[in-house]
Length: 305
Image (cartoon, rainbow, N blue to C red; front, side, top):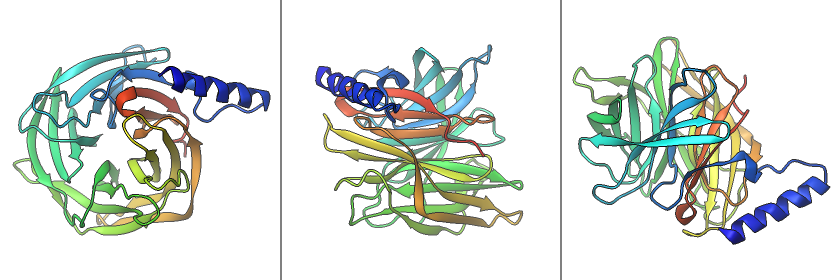
C-alpha cells in the first residue's frame, strides 16, 4: 500500500506541474474495503439519502467460500462511506460479479455470478431473499461474466450482459435479450443477440474488455474495462462510452456499438469492476475490486445525455 500511494503521489505531482488533473487521482476515491473479501464487484442504486446529499447502493463481493459476505449496503457521501452487511437468504452463489435494480419493481434486484447464474432478489432491510434463479441463455464456451444491466424503454424490459474477454485474442461478447418474469418469479429471456467489443484502454495481455455495464436514461452504454496482473496488481482501468441500446414498443432490442469507443476516464492502479449511472443525475458511481489492496468507491460525471 505504501508503494502504491507513493506511485499515486508522484503521478499527481507530475500532472499538477503539467497543469492537468490526473484521470485516476487518489483523492477521488473513498475506501470501501480493506482486503480481498471486501472489494466491489458490482453496484446497484437503491435510493437517495433523506437529505439528498448521498446515495444508498448495494454492492456484491466475488467471494466463493461458504458463509462469506456476498452483499453489502454502502451509503456514499462526499468524504465518507458507511458500509453494512446484507444477509443472503437462499441458495448461496459463488463469485457474484454484478447487480442491478429491476425497474418498476421496488426492492427487487438481479445479481449475476461469473459462470452465468442470475439471481432475482428481494431486499428488505438487511436481508436479501432469493426469489428465484436461472442460467443466462446462450452461454458460450469459456464465457466469464462480470457485467449485467437492465434497460426499460417503451414499457418493455431488456437485459445486457457480457463475457469479459481476455486480451487481444478474446474480445468481450456483449449479449442482449428481452426480459420478462414467470408468474413464480423466474427470469425469462427472449431472443439473444451478440456483439464483439474491444476496449480502447487498457490494452494489456490480460485486459477484461468489459468488467461492468450501465445504461443511461437515453440509452448510452457505459462500460468499464480493466487489466489485472494478479492479486497485488498492478491494475489499470478505463470507463468508456461503448454505444447505444434501444428497446422498441414491440420489445425488440437493438444494440449499436461504436466503431471506436470513447474513453471517458482512465484509472491507473485501480481495477474498476462496478459502474452505475445514478438515476436523474449525470454521475456514475465507480467501484473497484483491487484484490489484496481492498476496494474503493468514487464518482464521475459520465452519464449525461
